Length: 247
Image 1 (cartoon, rainbow, N blue to C red):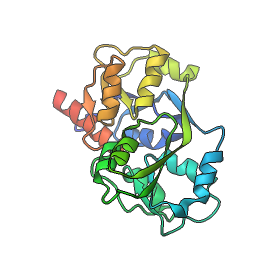
Image 2: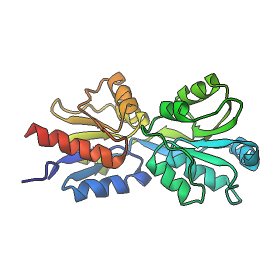
Image 3: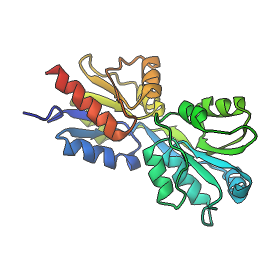
């Protein structure tokens, strides 16, 4: 058998409305995905600040998006075409693709898909007005780096992350046992930890990147796999490599 993921029961903790692509790629690799959404995303209850800043977009030099969700929820409040003189920045390829599909192609996507690399990789930010559209409880590091480089940063939360209790079918699937537990954000880690279910000792814990891995360790998980490329595809490939080496 040449497929290291064949018949592996792999838990997907992403929000239910964002799990389809991940589960489809796992199934294509021969795995058996278990949908177990530990968080859900919602727009902010009050979008007054977001709407005000979107009206003022032309006053900004750059607008930074740190997730596909930030793009999605921002565009839900944007009632006119994106002003082309306003440059956009995307944290990674999925966010970049979401922007391109909306005619707002990013000028910069860091080679390593983290907030730190955005902050350090942007050139000539001193004196610039930068709008940072983010999750409600996002890490402060990006704004801190940009401000340290003398940029004028306005932060606006465009959506919030809430804990989610999976339904009975998902809980029953988990009880049957699983081979790997995947986390695609620090929030999914915290959501799983809040449910209070601990994986068996032999279960592989796989994280999409170092920030998520750090959150997993802080919650008491032993991290076995960190994706080399911080994408869903990269996570699946790294998980397959792990099982391939373990044979």
